[in-house]
Length: 464
Figure (cartoon, rainbow, N blue to C red):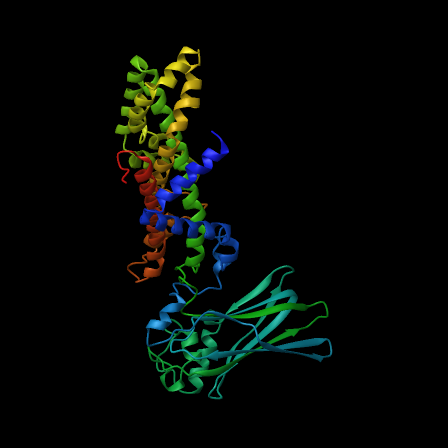
């Protein structure tokens, strides 16, 4: 086929394809998924989400079970947003060999629900005594902690106020005679810090809005001791586009990371299974006789075996792996196009040029792969597009049952984690809806494209 003929064929196909609106919608969605795939490093808010999804320490600075930030637009009570306090004032004082580094972080608190935690980090080397306090807008000062710590080379210290400062905040309430039976078990440190004192012990404390100055003093005893960098993060009650799960992982990062695995699972399974099915169907039609009968009996055995139970058993017996899942799905999915391809192959077999090729001594392999299979490529592409959604749903089902590959981030894994974490019972809809919606959109994408291609390429469905 000449290059010009190929161009004309593509042009004619596109002319027909444009008439199918659902197909165009499918192409738009496919373009969106491909955009996410190619620009994933730029879109991920946490760059190492793929590699460290199971590493809880990577996510420890995030709030647990935080809702998406945009829900503040629809609620009367605004929840504190997670943020990094970058602006600070740094001073260093010397008293002989003792050095005191003083740092001030300013937090503009304008919310109705207090953040879940304040997290301070410092890197360097040596021994340091960390003293922290907070000055409230009403003039009250709360001493949060005083603790000697050791910073190892190449590592950092991490101080979470909510856990380390409970006793200090209790002492603050005692001084003001506002304790009223509050204990370390019932106390939420940040609720006290960011609320009015007269209501600080209630379950719904009134917020004290304004500028909070978080004071950090680091005392270094030796000249070799040093502080390289510091940071202060506010772990809010809402975070990011899709919030966090109960392990503090960012759901948006998980959904984006799952795109490439969904495409890989769907496309690879579809390409392998449809290619095998097309070749098998053509061979069965061309060879005929007892060979055709034998191949059809083999086909009937495979098509009668239920796929999902086999996958469940295989995943339970062998170590769950995405490659094993793709292989097993391909082994059983190839039967789908066989009957249709065989009927089309029986018609092609009777064409004059096939008889001429046979008369000229062409081998069976040459006739099958040179003259028959190329005619079925358009049908194969349409079948591949329709097979992708099924493969994605099967993987999601296995993951939901806890039999998926635990080393990768898939939408099925997100749903499985949500199920085991009691997301629906806790009202954490943002943990369930996004991965489920992503699976549905990916399925719609290839279903729309596949239906459009089938409508154009299948003579029985083609309309003028």
